[in-house]
Length: 326
Image 1 (cartoon, helix red, strand yellow):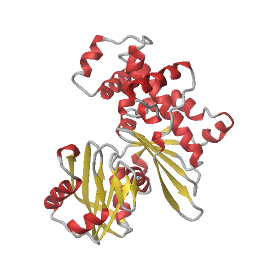
Image 2 (cartoon, one colour; image 1 turned 120 degrees about the vertical axis):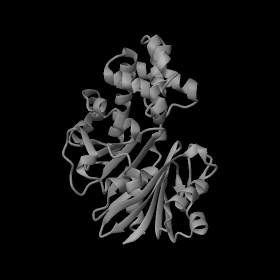
Image 3 (tube, helix red, strand yellow; image 1 turned 90 degrees about the horizontal axis):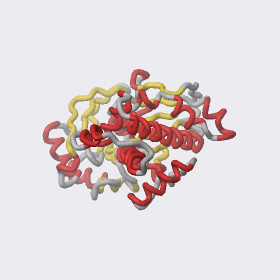
């Protein structure tokens, strides 16, 4: 039995947990969630948690939103670096590793239960084959769990930043609108929380659908993406419904792209708060059609199942899983 530390560091929220690891199973001892922007640095936040946890873990793994190299992660949405060597020096933790958050999520999928998954597209997973992971949240994260013939190997990716490819005239209009507003139109600019709002703004500001005064007032009280999702799920507002339908189509298309890139016969796994929120909407013909709309590759994609990961701690579990192997 040994104590391990896991952490998931996001642009808005961070969660740390200490686990007891024994005989291949994890028992969570203590966990705390923090508002990331409230702290001056990652190290201050970790010091705060360890003081509360009163634990000295033997190994630790931290997953963060940003590219990682040589055990250092530079966060995308914060001016922070998370350095494994510095963690070792400051806190005396012997074994430390730092990963991109979607690498961590991939390791988390390895230890999920069936009850953690909601299947949104039919298909039959093939044993001993690759899987694809992507998730729309603050940004769009992606990774591949590659089957190497004897074991899985996690491939990190920044695929959310590839160019957004318009497929029809309406989408060309959207692409130009997004480029004017953001300077660039990549997939993340439309498949993310802000992306959902951008789609809504495009539809209402260009006259494709009418914006209701009621929804505009709601935007002042809640985050726009939450309002749009809620209104669409309840079927109350046509502009919100259209925005979510377009978002669903873009999300599905990118999921199909990644499934082809990875040849993900083991399945595609959608993660993140927006995926969980819209799970019922994603289980639709809009998603299925856009996912499979790949010409000659449609028969391959029809066989690939798609799941929404409903366990919000999948990245934390992945960090714990990897820490146990250090």
